[in-house]
Amino acid sequence: MDFDKWLPVQLQFFTLIPSAASCYFAVKNQMRYTWSKTAAFCLATLLPYSFLAAWITAALQIDANLLLLPSLLLFFFLYRRTITTDLPRALAVYVGICAVQSFPVQFSYALDACLHPLSGANDVSAYAAAFHLGLSCLVAAAFAYPACHKFSWTVDHLDTPKIWYSTVILSALFLFFNILAVPNSYSTLHAGRMLYLFPLIQGCALVLLISIYLLFYQSAIVMLEHARLKEHSQLLEMQSHQYQTLKEHMRQTAALRHDFRHSVRLLSSLAAKGDLDNIQKYLSEYETTLAENTPADYCANAALNALFGYYHELAVFARIDTDWRTPLPEPLTASELDLAALFGNLMENAIAGCLTVPKEKRYFCLTTEIRHENSLYIVSTNSFDGKIRKGKGGYHSTKHSGRGTGLASIAAITEKYGGSAQISNNDQEFFVDVVLKL
Image 1 (cartoon, rainbow, N blue to C red):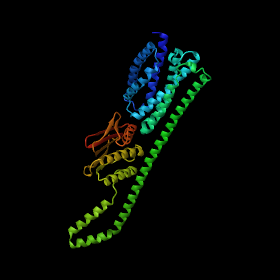
Image 2 (cartoon, rainbow, N blue to C red; image 1 turned 120 degrees about the vertical axis):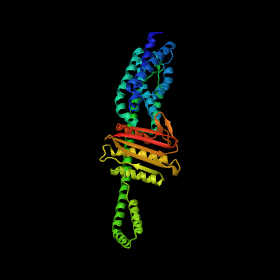
Image 3 (cartoon, one colour; image 1 turned 90 degrees about the vertical axis):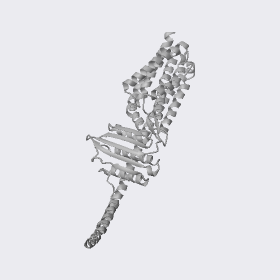
C-alpha cells in the first residue's frame, strides 16, 4: 500500500476525534460516565476504526465517505449509550456537530484545489488533510466554551421535543448541502470564479448556521424565562386566592364574634335548666362551624401555603383522599420559586395519576421532614393505574413523546441543590422520594 495515499486518508479519519469531543460539550451535565472514562471509551473506539478505515480506503482506493457516512449512524448509537439525555436533544447535538464539522473539510478541498488543480476530493494531498485536521481541532476548541457554558444550559432546561427535532432538520439540511457540494474533480472549481466563490459560499453558510444556533439559544432563553414568569404568575394567583380565603375567614370570624353574645345567653339559659345534652350539642355544632371556616395551615411560608391550599382544593374536588404533613422551615434557604416548582410539579403529577383510577381508590400522601438540620426530605405516594412509559433517560410522559416535563423539572431542581430524586412505582402506587440540601 502506498504510504503517500494512506497518510492523507488517515489524517482525515483522525478528525473524528475532535468531532467526538465536541459532541460532549453541550451535554456535559448529561454524561453517564466521567470525562476520563468517556474519553477512554471514545479513543478505544475511534482510533482502531480510523486506522482500519484508512487502510481499507487506501488499499481499495475508494471514497472515504463511503465508509464514514454509514459509520456515523453506528457512532450515534454508541454516543447515546454514554449520555442520559433523551433522543431529540441527543440527535440535535450530534447532527449539529456533524454539520459544523463538515465545513473544515470543504475549506481543505478549496486549499487542495489551489495546490493541485488536476486532482479531486478522492485524492486529497497530505498538506490539505493536515489543514483539515488542524481546522477541525480549531473549530472544536472555539466551540468548547460557548457549548459548555451556554448551550449545555439549554440542553438541561429546554424539554420540548418538537423544537429539538426542528434543529435536527435544519442541521441536516446544511450537512446534506455540504455532501452535495464536495468537488469530486477540482477542475469544476477552476471554472469561472468558483475557486473564489466556493470558500466564500462555504464561509457564509457557516456563519449563517452559527447565527441560527445563536438565535436558537436566545429564543430558548426567552421561552424558559416566559415559562418561569408564568410559574411566578400562577404562584401569585394562588396567593391571591389564599388571600381571598383568609379575607372570607376574617369576615366569617367577625360574624361569629358578633353572634357570640347570643350564644352565651343561650348557653346560660341551658345551664340554668341543667340541660347538659343540648349544651354539648350546641358546642359541638359551634366547633364544627369554626373548623369548616378556618383555612388550613400547611406551612409557615405564605407562598407555599397558598400553593398547597390550591392543589388541596383540586384534590378535594377530585375526591382524592389526602394525607399531607408539610412543615417547612421559615425563612427558607432555598429559592421560593424553586420549591414552588418542585412541589407544584409533584402535586400536579400525583393528582393526575389519581385521576386514572376509580374515585374510591384515589389517595395522595405527602410528607416533608427536616433531617440533619440541613436536609429536606420529601416523600410522595399516590395511587394510579400502573400504566407508565420508560426509556433510557427514565420515566417518559404518557401525554406526549419524550421525557415527562414535571419529573425532569423535579430532577433538575434537586440537582441544583445537591440533592437526589428517587422515582419508582408498582402496579398501584407511584413513589417520589426527594432530598434537598438547604
